Length: 98
Image (tube, rainbow, N blue to C red):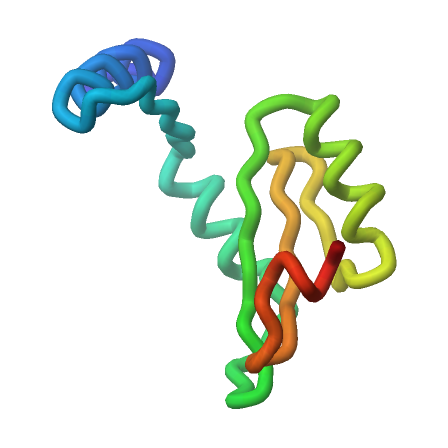
């Protein structure tokens, strides 16, 4: 029997929080949604770059991060609040954008 993501999420968060002794948060996506995100990723495998996929759970935070990364963004998938971007190897992720 398949369980709804909304039913599984609090169970996983509770179990992880108890196991790791901190408040855990998880994001769950339907397999087809993840497959769609992967298929839309525009980045080719390159030795000089790292691809990043950032999953964001609230629209406000998505909009804020999208604004911060706008200069570096290749694409976004706002329907699922996902940011796809890449960074040059040899640079720390935080130094690339801030």
